Amino acid sequence: MQRLRPNLLLDVQSSGRFLEDEWLGRTLRVGTVELRIVDRCERCVMVGHSQTALQSRPRLLKTIGKLNGACAGVYAEVIAPGELKENDRAHLA
Image (cartoon, rainbow, N blue to C red; front, side, top):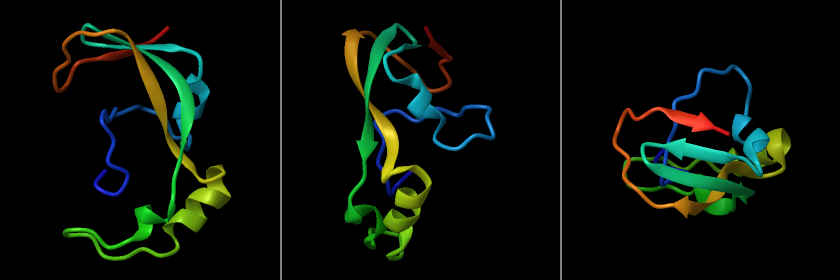
């Protein structure tokens, strides 16, 4: 979580990797917020750099690249602003 610095982190029950790639074009509802998933998030070398309380992981980007074309996470645009709280359920439409 600290390396990729997401604005929203969901705990999904899936054994699949990079499940979020299947959400492109769909609407995600969390709390009263509605988001349209618009693109995959391409990662850069910064994910492997040392950070506060995190050691350097120089091969991390290469691993993400091999597994998912250097993408991890998705971008979303706000359809309906609102409020969300920790432990709110997320629903895909």
